[in-house]
Image (cartoon, rainbow, N blue to C red; front, side, top):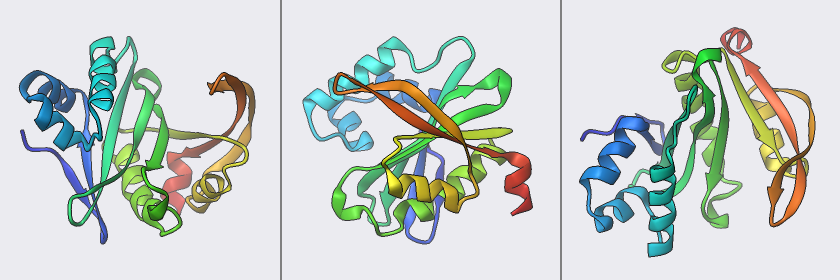
Amino acid sequence: MDFKIIETDLLRLRLLGEAEYKYIFECLSDPEIIELLGLDSEEALQKEKAKYVRGYITFNKSFLFIQVLDKEGRHIGMSGFHTWYLDHARAEIFYILYNDENKGKGIMSEALPAIISYGFNEMKLNRIEAMIEPNNMASLKLVEKFNFSREGEMIDHYCKDGVMENSVIYGLLKTTYEKN
């Protein structure tokens, strides 16, 4: 299977949607899956398999995961869209760098324009949302850099390590994106 790749100056973004995950988990061996997904343990492999078996897609929601690779092909992070409401043309963007050594180097500042563009132009989204922990200043600044608007704070929105935490919600409309 040929995976769709988006190239930036410093990164390669590998898109993984429903068809790609079906191929990965139904046609590849465990060592091939570990290599392709950049997993670091058998436990991580089993978690990914469980997610696949439970189903990434539900009635009207889908996903698009994007592996962030450096130019040498090393897995350095993950981004993409989850909670993609097909009927409503909106999705929540996410991004993560796996190692602290890669943080603060502008990697996500380079990746996000391509990811946002893909969301609006290829996925036909009308709205992209970001839900961010209130003290994650780097992430808050990142979405603001790309013209996301702060819309409010959701109280006790998610559970982290057994503790309910808030999320700041940001949104970016296609019309705002197209003006900039």
